[in-house]
Length: 411
Length: 158
Image 1 (tube, helix red, strand yellow):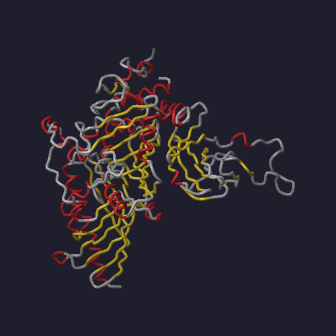
Image 2: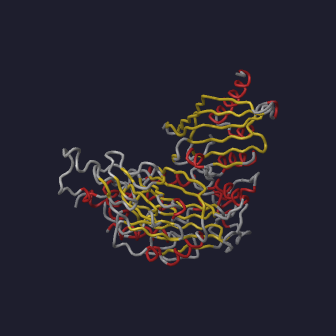
Image 3: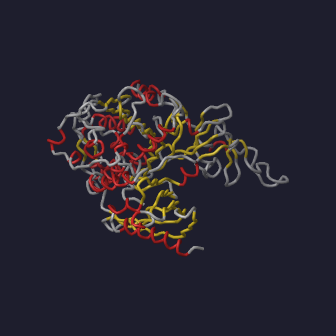
């Protein structure tokens, strides 16, 4: 066995170790595109609220494969590869719009809203000269169509016929927690992208790591938005790759666990001069102030107090990941609620008091493991099991992620 | 063209960018009036009429909170900016108030020496000419990023 093969074997400890080469190898990245993103997984593509009318389209991604998502004349959601059957050019270049037909700008081949090739320019030639032979079959290279399913306004797509139905894939508890947030019509508030200088799995790993949240992010700990001693929990569902973690507000007003342990994020005299930043409303009415839900391989649904967002993970090569944020409120929000959500948008995104640090931390891992492809990360908080837990001092959902990952990859 | 007015505005912008680039962040909120609005958004959100901002402050107190958080709470690598602003258009609204539009680019220099073009865009400002200590101050500063993408994080203000 060569050294290369030895270093590419998964460590014997199985789920409590993740070898660093998974974040580094070009061939692993290519296999992920095929086995995961274009394999038996449901990938988040966008919100139905982005496509309210027949003829609306948006461009999105299935891993690094470009796709077009449309609402056709009958109001059905469709998705297909953003690639012309002819020479492979992008069919839709604009991020969004409304069209009757989709036409490739390169040679004017056109498609209906379901991605069916409808016309080939000058197919019969001009004046009996040129054109394609009768036997030509350009449809053989048509853009691949995705199966599309929506749940509570969230659009998912898969290229594989073998992917189980969406709700089964998500798991009943994830479905319930999606419906909890998406319980009435939403309105778009805007979006942006945060570019992470690291492999896509380091971001997913970060989202699923309930252990880091109040240790890295001072805002959580200092203002008791999410301390691990607060009431809450983590639920792992589906094949392990889907999870939801949640926190109840103000159930540990007097605890001093963090202070006595000398944890960095609880120290320092941070006082807000504008404490209205922390104003929030229990709008769902169940006392859950923070819910982070992730679906393997590319989706996060966030409720941080009244800040609501979906985040789509788009791999941009081995060492780069785009996180596409789309923030929303509800259609029946009044002006006061709009203002509250906007104020709370200071927590999230690249400049967010909470979210900015995730970009830093995951990038530190990518750089830190540069010479250590034969080493592995230690994922032993909460033992070696994958199970829902009342404690968030656990890495159970991280282990769930790697169980799902290894299953899809055959590693 | 009112040359004195133009110079007043450009002087405010120059002092503002030097304060940020010289890491005098504690002085940054004082460039604003007490009830000032400071928003950073993207051209895409702005053009679509969507309200989401990356930074959304409606008072000078919120700006001081942000500086306090950056100094004492948030985790990010040591970095500096170099702002370049240009194309400053000034329009008087009334005796006390001016509207200004300017372009900017920001180079981000990491402690490692890596320097990249981090941001570009325009600022739409509403400026109160007779602010505290007789200096002009921002009543409103809307920073519109040309790109929807931000690399890693945006900690230091623009």
